[in-house]
Structures are given as C-alpha cells and as structure tokens.
Amino acid sequence: MCTLEEELTMFNNPDYQPRSPNSGPLYSNFAYNLLGIALEYVHKKPFDQIIDELIFKPNGMTHSQFTTPNDTANAILPIKGESWFSAPFGNFDPSGGIWSTPNELFSWTKALLENKLLSPADTRKWFQPHSALPSLNQLVGAPWEIFRPTDLNIKTPRPIDIITKAGGITGYTSYSIVIPEYNIAIAITAAGNDPVTAAIALLPIIVKPLVAYADAQAYNQAAAKYVGTYSNSHTKSSFVVVADDGPGLSLKSFFVNGIDMLVGLAAASGVRGGTGTARLYPADKDTFGKDGKEKWNIMFDRKISADGGFAQMDCISWNWGDAAKYVGQPLDTIVFDIGERGNVAAVELLGWRTSMVKTA
Image 1 (cartoon, helix red, strand yellow):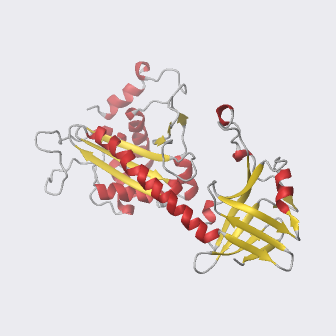
Image 2 (cartoon, one colour):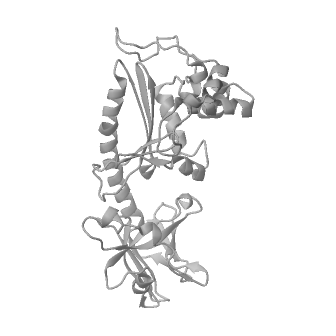
Image 3 (cartoon, helix red, strand yellow):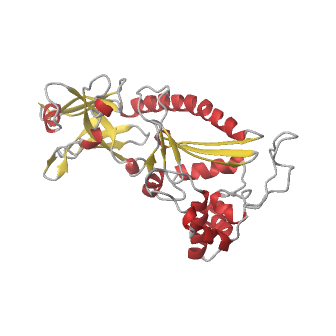
C-alpha cells in the first residue's frame, strides 16, 4: 500500500503519466485517488469523514463505512472455501473502498434518481457521457458505464440509457443502476469466487423485463392522462391527442379559428406534402409535478428511409425545435394544465394566446 507521499511522487513521475491525452477513455483508480487527495485539502478533513458527512448521513446509510467489517453475523458472505476477506484500502479509499449493504447501496442509487444529492440539472449533467467506446452500445461518463441495449422489448424502439457504476474487489462486486427514462433505480450485489460474472449475468435478467414492464405502464398512464379532444367553441379551435405505436403522443388534428394549424407548422418545420406526422414530446421535465402545469413540444416526425439514412442522419429531431414564434411566443410549445385528480383538464397554446378545455 502506497503512502500519500509515494502516491504523489508516482503522479509526478513521467513514466506514470498517460500517453496521448484525450485520445480515448481509460479507467484509472489513481485518478480518483488524486481527486480524494484534492477533496481532503479543500475540506480540510479525512476523505472518509467527508463522505460520511456528505453522503452517508444525509441518506441514512448507517451501515456503510470504509473500515473492513469484522462482524460476520449479519454479513452475506461467499460460501466456505471462497474468498471474502479484504484488507483496508488506505489511500486507495477514493477509488472505491466503501463497504455497504444491498439496502444502502439501493438507497444511494435511489437518492441519485430523486435528486437528493444534486439539483435536477446537475444530476442530469453528471449522468452525461464523456466519451464513446469502440462498442456501438456503450459510452462512459465520470464515473458511469452507460449501456444502450438494442434488444429491449419496448413499444417504440429507441435508445434507452442504462446508467451504471460497477465496483468490487476479490470476492465481491456491485452494480448501481439508474434508468432515468422510467425513474428506475436498481442495486445488484454478488459475492463468491467469480462475482463479476454473476453481476454481469444478472444485469440483463433484471433490466430487460423491468424496462418492458415500465414502458408498457408509461404508455398506458400517458394514454389515460393526456389522450382526448380539447376544444374552445368560442374560437372554433380544437386539439386532438391520441396514443399510437409511435414515439411520444400523436397530435391528430389542430385547429385555431377554424384553420388547420398543422399545415402551417409543418411548413415552418420544413415538412412538405404530408411527409411527416405531428407528435407531442415533453419539453421541460422540471415542470412536471410543479404548479399543475407541464410544458410539451409539437414536433414533426419526418418519413425516413428504412435504415434512417447514412449513420441514421435522417433522425435529427434535436435540431428541429422552436421552428416559429409569434410576438415572441413559441408556436410549437404547449402547456397542459393538470386537474385535481392528476389528469389533464386543459391545454394552453402559448403562441396562439388561447386555451382549450378537455371535452372528450
């Protein structure tokens, strides 16, 4: 085990410095040790005390610690003859020297998902990938391993980010898993001579059916909450939302003052001749559950080739928002007003300065 001075000397040794910086991702325990040293200097406290005050105590993690547990009465240990003891990590604690329980690992993962440690914006920023990998379905963040499986049984095939953090030592391994799309938090722990293989095998066994179930529930809940006809008889306006096999929700028709607004919006979005369909997508996740209002966007899904074009370049909807404004207000942004029972009661059309109540 290195002393602090030996570790810093190693960092300053050119033989240990990375070659060709920024040329590709590579996991480094030493990098997190260096981060731990920096935290100690900033907080003027030992690393284990910092984590106890910032992570363990706020989340009620009373059984999580950096000291190797010596009480086997309540431990889930590998079977007789398999490895289970580990010496203290010392200066390597920042690289993953925490001992915890399945329940407390889940508490930590759930706290991330519920934004109890960081603001929603900072949590989303932390979850962002920092680099792609040679695999088509894997990215890496700091410290996340992010998977985008293509074999999930979901109604509308699309990339679903499975944000994970694996960790472990000889005899033990763990997975913290967050799936923001469905507000799912999962914790996996395994022990034995080959716990890594066990945890990796459990990952799809747990994730795939759970995502399929959550996706079906999300579809049913969205249909019950938003689908319907919204109208304003005084302005001869109507807004019809349906749920189909496509992404988001389908905007079947949209009239203001008796005029078909979808034709004009399609033209503003560069869609001509009935080559696209109008759909609704959540625009501002942070408005959900606050003040009874939710912001959504109207976007046009264009007809694309079977393979989506070269590198799926046909699918660039992130570049199509905010196509038109009227007197400073966006024409493609709407606001659903949520009633007392949680269902939508009305829709506000910001750019048209009108609103419609749900009539069917």
